[in-house]
Image: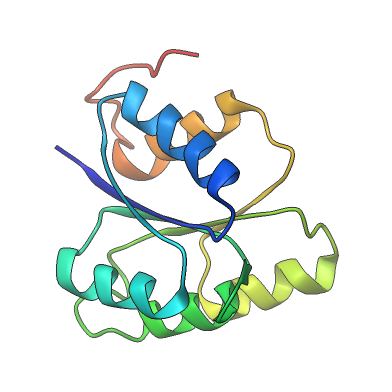
Length: 131
């Protein structure tokens, strides 16, 4: 089963993303602070990470950079930023930190699911995700 790490310090947003992923039978772990996100990524090696940019004790930019610098994760684990920040500078900073995608809130659930499929099942071996 594919493991996905969701990082967000707002419980409501964390529940929304997590619920969608659980409904698709993915295994999900969550973190709400930067240090936990980095440690979970290091220990569990998730297949995909959803990262918010605003965290209580740091930023998603810092967490993304730190995760991408982990020797055994850098190229293997895609990070998709989910943020209400839609400024081009914020997006550029996220990509510079190592983000692979940037999803702006509010987003359509179909878009979230399409990104999961794109990164976890590029050949379509799991079929089409329900929407």
